[in-house]
Amino acid sequence: MPQRKSSIFSSNPEENSHSFQSFLALSNQESTILGCIKEHIFPLIDEGICEILNTRTSNGSPFRVLSVGSGEGQNDINILKALIDNNRRVDGEAIAVMNRVIEPHLGRLDRFCSKAENLYEHFEGRATIDFEWIPTTFQEYTSQKKAHDVTFDLIHFTHSIYYVGVEEALVHCYEKELGKAGVILSIAQAEDDPMLKFARKFPEQRSPSFPRNKDVVSVAIKRGWKYFACPGDSNSLDITTIFDSSSRGGNFLLDFLTNRVQLRQNEGMETVRKILKFWKQQSYVNEDGRRIVDIRDHAVIILKGFDH
Ligand SMILES: C[S@@+](CC[C@H](N)C(=O)[O-])C[C@H]1O[C@@H](n2cnc3c(N)ncnc32)[C@H](O)[C@@H]1O
Image (cartoon, rainbow, N blue to C red; front, side):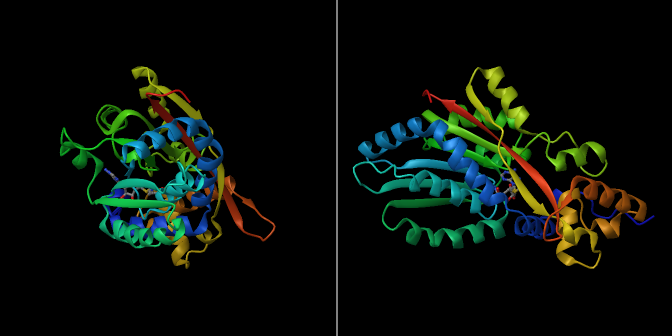
């Protein structure tokens, strides 16, 4: 039996990065999340957001966004684009935005910084964005929060609620990070997502009890906060290469799907066979002969201080 050397994925940030990159390259998750934000989420909160933007502009203060666990920032950038591109300019003035970004992985934060430089061109004078980069965990950040610090209008956890302790994080955000009015957004795996099905079937690989959006909803109900749960959208993940043991990208993706490091080296053949069988059953073959799995995201929006 091969030794289970390094099976806890979260304690191997470099392998985790390669695997996550492989997942992003083979899925259309980022564009699906952008679609969900534009088509479902912003229409629900548009009026409230406009009101906050107007107040901010007339006070001469920026609209403030707090991103938690930004990764390399593509989803954060898409959220800014959805916010600004939707013609919300007050009297033609440029929108001023401040985005504080909390991300403990320095390499990811660096890559986000490089992408952020190109945003000035994208917005062509329609918006000015100041980023504040916070290279630490959310837990560390909250422990150092000063009483007189700024508050935020929009806080988002895009596939990062898993790592922060749902109730403490949300209560902290609602009470200490949001101002009088604002929005918390959590995008996370849906309950019928195949990765969650995998966790239920192979709990020794990936615990099925990781925090999810249903926990976000429970906290909102318990605290009496106004919230909306949006079913989210499906995006396609091409898993063809996981069945090819010689594919480097395929092995990284297999690690991502199973939450393990070097699954093929560290698990017995029989376990690997069962895992591959599971993923084959979850997938279908598209017209190009590629094996595709539908991944499902789900969104919860918590509102403070305004009606939608
Ligand atoms: C699954 S990735 C999602 C990245 C990005 N938001 C996206 O949607 O592509 C989760 C991110 O959360 C970060 N993370 C992990 N633990 C964290 C913590 N305790 N506080 C803040 N971020 C954390 C990871 O470094 C990683 O970049």
